[in-house]
Amino acid sequence: MDLASTLDHGFRTTCKIILGKEIGGLEECGDWLSEYSKQPIVRKSSLSGKPVYLESKHYPENRRDCMFCFNSKNIFRAIGNAEYPAEDYSKIKRSLLEQISGELQKKKSLKWNIYELGEHV
Image (tube, rainbow, N blue to C red; front, side):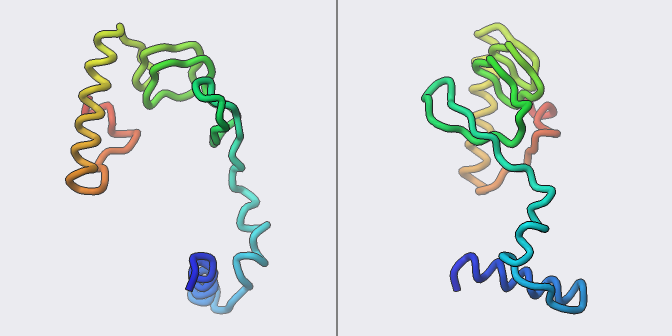
């Protein structure tokens, strides 16, 4: 069974369990299911010129060397919207990337999320 068929089967089965009957397949209900889904915004990467897909039209502008930043403009060498001197930013970035890559390599998952990241810096 291909992925589309598997997902459709799961949707139909879930509807039977929750609603007591089948309401149709994913394709038939697609408009309704995606009514409140955000469609990605396509912009051109300032580095490569290739298209990048963003989840919001309010994506930050004019940023360089930023990680985990949001709703920000014109910031540089920032982590979580806080700007750092070049040397400090490099040290923190290197430490974060070592911890993240180490955990992913060992556990194939990451215990952190964006809300808890500040506790590990």
